Amino acid sequence: MSGTYVIAGGSHGIGLEIVRMLAPTAARIDVWSRTGGDLPSVATIRHMPCDFADPEGLLPELPEEIHGAVYCPGSINLRSFRSLQPADFRQDFELNLVGAVRFLQACQPRLKGPDGGTASVVLFSTVAVGQGLPMHASVAAAKGAVEGLTRSLAAEWAPKIRVNAIAPALIDTPLAARLLSSPDKREALAARYPLKRIGEPADVAALARFLLSAESGWMTGQVFGVDGGMSTLRT
Ligand SMILES: NC(=O)c1ccc[n+]([C@@H]2O[C@H](COP(=O)([O-])OP(=O)(O)OC[C@H]3O[C@@H](n4cnc5c(N)ncnc54)[C@H](OP(=O)(O)O)[C@@H]3O)[C@@H](O)[C@H]2O)c1
Image 1 (tube, rainbow, N blue to C red):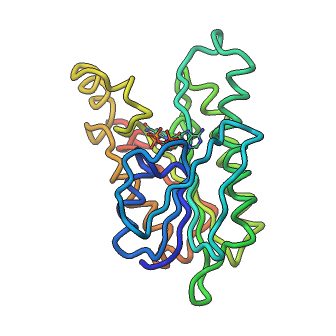
Image 2 (cartoon, rainbow, N blue to C red):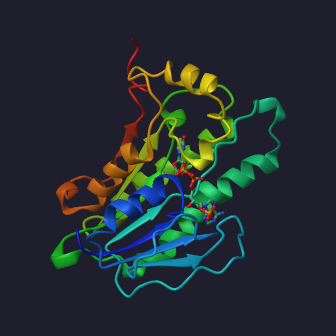
């Protein structure tokens, strides 16, 4: 899968795994994040410092042509509705939705499909939008907005640019580290899933890679669950 990709939040977790999967064949991958994280040292991968939590922060320069764009920064702010302040909702909205909007508005003029095909955008939601879960009010509200953005942009940008989202359940990444901080917690959480395990970054990155490729060329405006069966099954 050659091509030029911009991965916001590609330094850790799911985004890093997407970068690793694209790296062997990509012509160029620009990674936008606050730190270089665990990025491999490869000539085709460039780290560009960027903080989407800062509404005034400048965005890095983009390549002339972008075949695929992914926005990974997000939050898991699990608190009761009673303890959440309006500022918490604004903070989650800024990182999950407004950051994605700023990223995509910057990318839009340069998103072009290779060889007359479509360019591809991948965004991130959460299982907690389609399934009501306690303590998820703030993140579910922000990610619900991301799902609305996904479908609206897919319609507005068709037929040149495809836009899809992935809605994961619990994935073993730095973002989820607090929830998975002991073997007991891991075991108890894994038992809640029909597939009886926590997700791995590669479970999600493999779908992102497919959505960025021409093989998914007739798919747009969709939100795909990668959730060990949680959103649809009772076992
Ligand atoms: N992990 C889960 O259980 C889970 C479940 C449901 C949904 N999701 C969603 O899946 C997506 C990826 O999650 P993940 O678990 O891979 O997250 P992660 O481990 O926290 O990685 C997030 C990436 O985004 C970057 N980032 C975070 N805040 C940023 C900011 N303000 N400005 C620029 N870059 C920023 C991080 O790099 P730096 O720290 O270097 O900036 C990192 O590269 C998120 O949208 C998340 O909401 C995850």
